[in-house]
Image 1 (cartoon, one colour):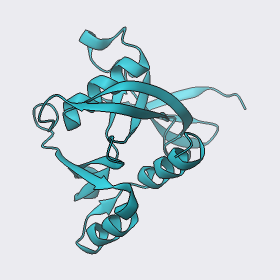
Image 2 (cartoon, rainbow, N blue to C red):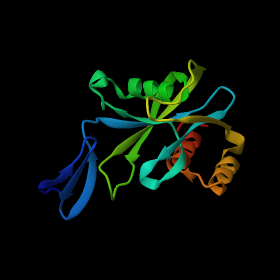
Image 3 (cartoon, one colour):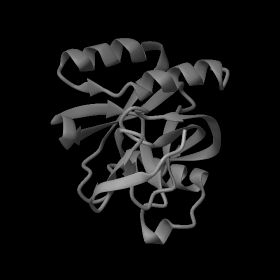
Length: 177
């Protein structure tokens, strides 16, 4: 479906658009979003905990990051950005990265497409924690108990990003578990 796109407002990072009666958000100066399904050699899923202002709560998420959002990384490939974000947020570096799926993050609200990347052969190279102002806590959870652990965290008041469940499904079915 085509139609004229009208910009309703724009900030530093987001642009509010209207097309064919739909209002939606686009990211400004971003070429993509990488979401990492990072699994250690001990079959542990690497997760991050971070406060998210829009929902006013701490969230448990898969490590993720934007591609091309900063001038220093404008020519960076998706996989290079994925590994950079993995290291920044978790302190792990992947020896092997592979794209397993692309899908909308919230098709009724944003044009954003996320790319799920399986990260394997992980090496701990630093503390993680994100860049200035992110205050990320790394959580490494055995795959065998991840559902139970996420349930417990939810009961404690954490919000659980549904991309974790999509990532686990992709890990089992697209990657071969």
